[in-house]
Image (cartoon, rainbow, N blue to C red; front, side, top):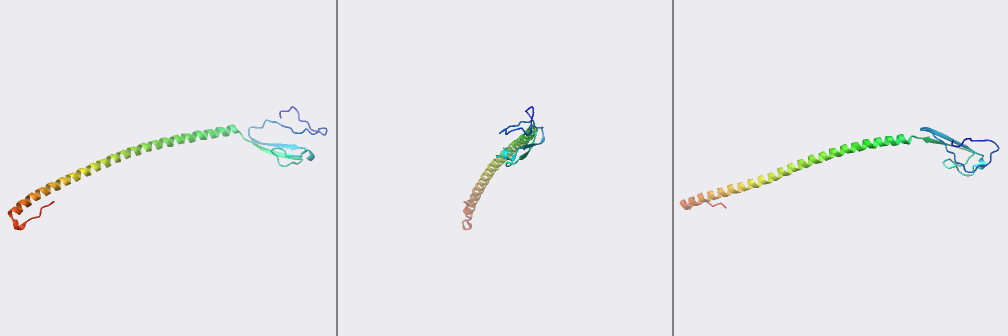
Length: 152
C-alpha cells in the first residue's frame, strides 16, 4: 500500500470515494476485498459486481514484459521465415524466367526450321514439276498420240 497505515475501527466515518494503490507481484493473482456497511454501498464499485456489504475482486497479474518479449521473438522468427520464403520465391521466379526464355528460343527456332523446311519442299516441288514438264514436253513431241498431262 502507498499509505503508511490503514486504520479500521468503530470510530471511522464515511470517507467517500477512495483510491488505494499497491504494488502487485510480477505474476500470479491478486485478491482485493472491500468491506463496508451495506448502507454505505449505495453505488457499484468500479470493476466489482453490484453493491453489497463486501466485494471481492481477483485480478490476474501477468508479466507483460515477458509476453512482449515472447511475441517479439515470434515476430522475428516469422519475419525470418518470410524472408526465406521470399528468397525462395525470387529464385523460383528467376528459374521460371530462364526456362521461359529457353522455350521461347526453341519455339522461334522451330518456326524458322518449319519455314526453311517448307521453302525447301516448295523448291523441291518446283524443281520436280519443272523437270517433269520438260520431260513431258519431249515425250509429247515424240509421241503425240500418247500425250502426258503437264503438272502445275
